[in-house]
Image (cartoon, rainbow, N blue to C red):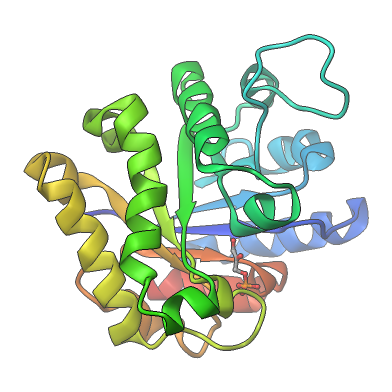
Length: 249
Ligand code: 13P
C-alpha cells in the first residue's frame, strides 16, 4: 500500500501575511488529515517563513524548481543546497510551466532531477501532454519521452527516491480536470513503463495527479488504483479547500 501524498504548489502566489494565515489554518486542520502526507512548495523567498511556521508539524515543504548547478555566477538561480538550508524535503522538477515558459528541456529536467536527488531532496518529477498532443493520440509517447529522459540518465532505481506527478497541461489552471478514468489510464501506463524495468520500483513510487484538483473532485481521483495523491495549484491557496483535498488522500 503506497502512502498518499498531497502537495500544494503555490506557484507565484502569496505574501508574508497571507502565508501566515494559510499556514496557521493548515496547522490547525491537520488533525483531520488521517491518511495523507502533506507538503507545500512556496516561492523560494518564503521558504524561511514557511520553515519557521511548519517546523515540528507533520507538514513538509520544498521548492518549485532548482538549479542544475551547484553554485557560482548564475544570477537568479537557487541551488539544491540552498533548499536544504531551509530543511526542504521536496523539490518540483519539470513542471509544465517551467518547460513551456522557461524552455526547460527533457535533458535539463533530468539534470535538475539528478542534482536534487544527489543532495538528498526528493524530486517531484512532472510529466504531461499538451491538448493537441492528447488529441493527436500522443499522450503515452510524450509521457514516456519525459520519463525516459530521467530513467535513461539516472537509472530506474533513481525513481524509488522520487515522486512522479502526471499533470496534463490542458487541465492545469483551466478548471478542466481529467476524468478519474483518463487520469488512471495514464498513471497505469507510467507504472507499467517502470515495471517493465523494475517491478519493485513501480510498486513503490508515488504517482500524483495534478490539474484542476478541487475539494469536490479529489476523492474520486484519489480513489483510483494508481493515483497516490495530488499536486495542487489554485486550490492549495485556500486552507479549507486544501484540507478537504488532503482528507481525500
Ligand atoms: P491547478 O490545480 O491550479 O490546476 O494547478 C495544477 C498544477 O500545476 C500543480 O502543479
